[in-house]
Image (tube, rainbow, N blue to C red; front, side, top):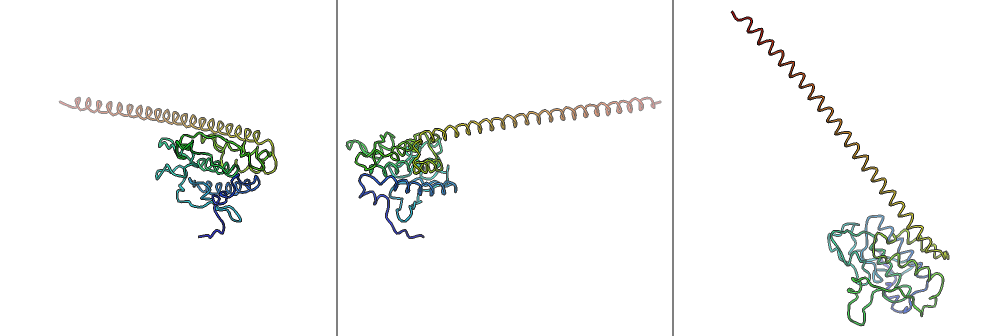
Length: 268
């Protein structure tokens, strides 16, 4: 087991009340996304991404895979994670709707908000509800930290454009880890057209999805046509076989009749 000489992101944020610098945040998020892309490619989702499970050393480390599961295999403890960082499809788990690795992206969005503001995305309202209840209801407001030195910087603006796409309630519309990493790299390179970039990516994704659906529909139609042809072929062969049997039966009957007639003629 690797020894990590560092501290958790939670401990780091304890002394950074207004969040981390934009560049530091981007660096941490890029390293986290690279780790998440790796485990997602291996068919694993973490399911408990939060500042306590992120170690900050020379490089960022994602730790504690105690709740990790194979993607689309949530039969054991399906509702799991840390309140305040749980994706809506997990905290409101429906056994009829299996969730996937996009749940990790929602959790990472909560972490990004914490890094940028020093505050939790889901909070209690005047002590009338718990963080868990607030997380379960799903209501939140994305507000910049006015005390942050880079509150009005271009990169901060672009990061707040990315956030809603990571925190999308519908997992099918939520960005995946690879796209998030691409967008972060563009922000790092001072791209001020992140919103347009994300829209293009989403449009391409929808077009690819529609094309895939059409291809699947064409494949299903072709399979259906092949089945029909096969059934017709079977029907033709069956009819041919039946016709052959019928002709054969008639021939046998005629031969038997001839034998009977001949036998009758031989009688004295």
